[in-house]
Length: 303
Image (spheres, rainbow, N blue to C red):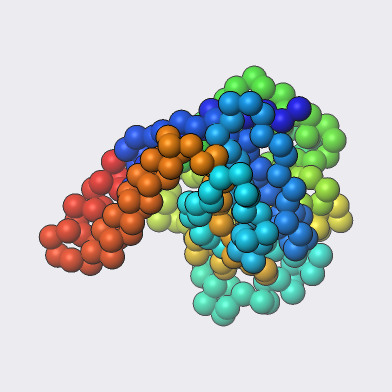
């Protein structure tokens, strides 16, 4: 049975949500295997009272194939979805990085090792019991991260999430990594695996260690684990962009998030407002280099 859920259509500037309008949407999130298949997703039927569909990570060449005759379409954002082929081996992957990237990662790892009495302390967690231990330690880090404080996107602390994490661990379909300095965790990474695709779900580090780049070092060591795991085939960096994703990936797909809404007056008014707001934000972004406007934009984005 198809379910439509109340979903906030956010009016955002950077990480800050100014306000949102809720619509009842059937969500159609595409996994990496869907993105790489080259086939347009089949939209489920809309239940009574639903406003439309929200299709995320739709490859741009498939936009026209997914547009519906029952309403109108609106591209909310465009981005590149990155992934890494985990079957090529760690050495081949590392050699594929630029010389500057390789030397930078080695330098950062050495610096963190020196802060920990000469050795890098990265621990891997796989089983259900290990996942329980990982969750408690990772939450100590997550509570201090900007992902949690600013975005509300730190590692969840609910019973349902912990149970799901341990279930994935029992099936050997989960990976958790922690980076320690002096016996204290300073960075975490949690990635579940489905059908060989390892998903970049939750990551964070203690902001007191930001200048040491603990996230990049932890991810490098996590890749050592994954390249040695025969069941792991691809690493999915999920939606969004960033230098770290570009640097570590071996493949990319231009994607878009698409709203397909019924042609009601309320929906049309909502989309008109979204378009006007997004256009305004884009104009402001282009003005970030202006001496007066730039600092003001930065303050608004941070909230």
